[in-house]
Amino acid sequence: MLLRSAALAFETEVLTALDEITLQAPFRHMVTPGGFTMSVAMTNCGEAGWVTDRTGYRYDRNDPETGRPWPAMPTCFLDLAVHCASRAGYPAFRPDACLINRYEPGARLSLHQDRDERDFAKPIVSISLGLPAIFQFGGLKRDDPVKKFAMRHGDVAVWGGASRLCYHGVTALKEGVHDVLGRMRVNLTFRGAL
DNA sequence: TAGTATCA
DNA sequence: GGTA
Image 1 (spheres, rainbow, N blue to C red):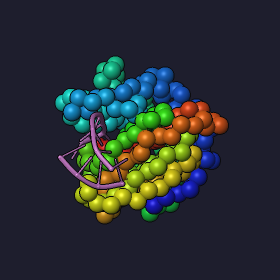
Image 2: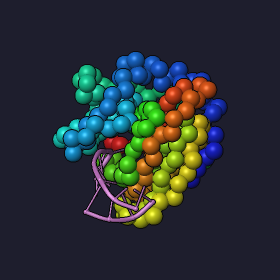
Image 3: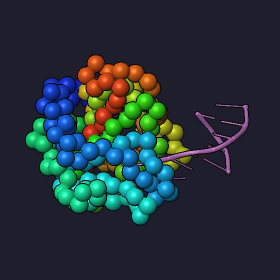
């Protein structure tokens, strides 16, 4: 489900909270098990954070860079995620993890599944901020055809149920400057990981 | 295969 | 965008 501009009411609060998070847990380019450095820079907040290194993908309660717990999930993040999940038909959703992805022009995320979470009954809530991007949403097999969605500042995608394990990704970010965020896109992905 | 390279 |  796509909620157009659903996050705009929370814009100021969310961006302020984002600055506080990245002060404690700066964006970093993680390495995949294959040994490639990701073009997207990531950080997390919440009880657990998604991380990747040569070892594999996992959720970790601590930031591997510092050994300290990830910054707590701000109330405005939680409120926004709960609001969007409820609107999309998941009124009981309470995320315990938020992966924060920063895209600069050229950055992309190839087709993948979110499957490191414990309970696939819980949906994924994905919020787009800053520069627009093309979100690809496919099927349960990597080769299934994908639909493309232009995600703009404030847009929210929610998927779950039969779509929970669908492959998805983001094509290379086009060059541009956003009024509020400048030359970047930020994506907040809320999960029930634990 | 949360990627890159190469062709078209 | 499809292939490997």
